[in-house]
Length: 315
Image 1 (cartoon, rainbow, N blue to C red):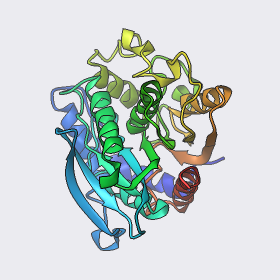
Image 2: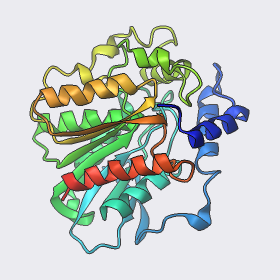
Image 3: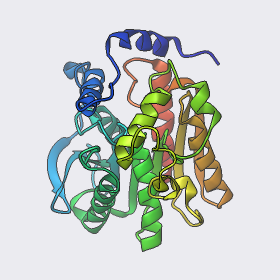
Image 4: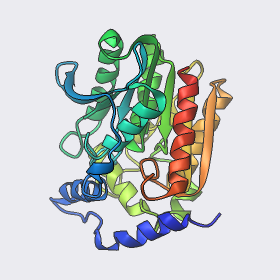
């Protein structure tokens, strides 16, 4: 279907925000750009209120922010991993995501501030994400209080980390109730039509995508896809040998997203492995729609579907 008109208007407004250019300050540019799109545009007066927001440190070294609902405990707990290409993003840029999850699910949301590339390339983000998840699992009574309703989730790069964490949790015997994967990258070294079809003009470009891959892997821009890490399931969860027995998943993709096809492929692979999956491709939307409720009613409806699907898995 055609690009959502509200999203199209938003994309036109971004023309003055330059994409990161190669060089020593490119990572700083990417971070500033994401904050300009999120924190700087946030209407603080209209910010969604929750019962409590508090800063904490997980596993002795990983900063996090805990959002608590008005609902009476015990409540579900969601360990949330922000997007931003493993280079940008922080607790502030994804404050809206965490607040919305907290409200929609009546859940405690633990938003994790994992280390970023290029200063801390792979596997730093994976290590921090999984350390945070296991820490919350061991201290769940301090968070939501219900060990039977612990989930891990994220958007974009954070969704990739969530998928990796779900796989590692299964291997380690750590019990989870669900995983939330919103437009994840699941196969860096793969070749997919959506990367060409949606590689320009739809918020996340193919050039930016490969630049983020290169920063994360510590590779040159031209060899990010061919690096040996491309077959590592901690980078490309679709490459895992066996997906059997993984926790139920909510997988969301967008029609105009370079990552669309590999996200769809991961949902299909999970289903083929016998995993319960709630999967939907949202037509007319672009990468980044999760959290764009204030920009597009269609994005808001998509966010509602995603959070409702996760709430069902945590019921």
